[in-house]
Length: 113
Image (tube, rainbow, N blue to C red; front, top):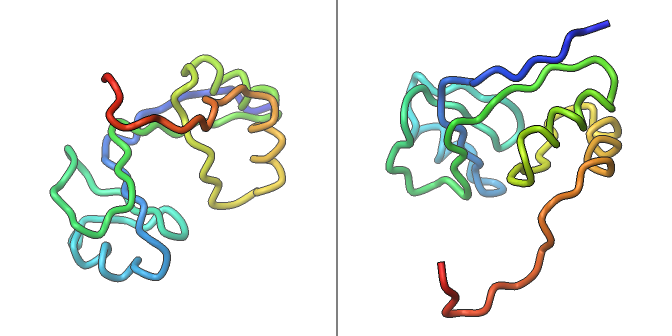
């Protein structure tokens, strides 16, 4: 059985817009690595980039054996996480179903912070 661990990546992760992966890859430079489709990691703090759809600060990698261990790890992180699987999509969907996420309620403009 795999022991559950939550390890910081020590980098910033960027999500590229659909069909603009090459632009973001060029913008991030040689030290960026591709984690999956549309997903890139670059060491250090966030960089000023134009081609990032989203930027994840202080991301972590969660290693686990059973899907319930993955769900428990996400629960331990709180409700501020995103479901963005790059492989094992069915397993990721099972885990997502076990963990309550934030409601996708529209935020009226202007809204208090």
